[in-house]
Image (cartoon, rainbow, N blue to C red; front, top):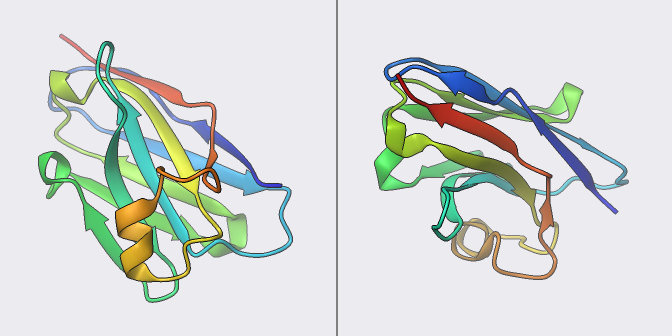
Amino acid sequence: QVQLAESGGGPVQPGGSLRLSCVASGYTYTSNCMGWFRQAPGKKREAVAFLYTGSGAIDYADPVKGRFTISRDNAKNTMYLEMNSLQPEDTGMYYCAQDPKLGTRRLCFEALGSRQSTYWGQGTQVTVSS
C-alpha cells in the first residue's frame, strides 16, 4: 500500500510561485509512473504533469508548459511541482498520484489517474488571487 502526502499549497498573488511536495511512504517497491493533477471548483480533475522515472521522461499539460516543473528526489521519496508565473486559472486542489501498474512511458502518460491501481494523495489547495 502506498501513502502519498502533499504539502506546499496556499494563497499566492498572480505572477507568484509555489513549490508543492508529495512524500511517498508505505511501499516496498518503486513506482515508475507518477504525476500531478488538479481540480478547480465545478470542474473535472485534469492532469498537470507526468514523470516516468524509468527513462526520466516528463510531459506537461499545455496550460502549464514553460511555467511548471516536475521533479523527484529519490533519496527523500519526494516528488515536487515547481509552479511559476501563477495565474488565477491555476487555482484548484492539487493532487499527486502514482501507479505501480503502469510500466511503460506510453502507458504512464496515457493512463495515470484513470485506473483503480492509481494511488492518490489527499490534495493541497492552491489559490491564486490578488
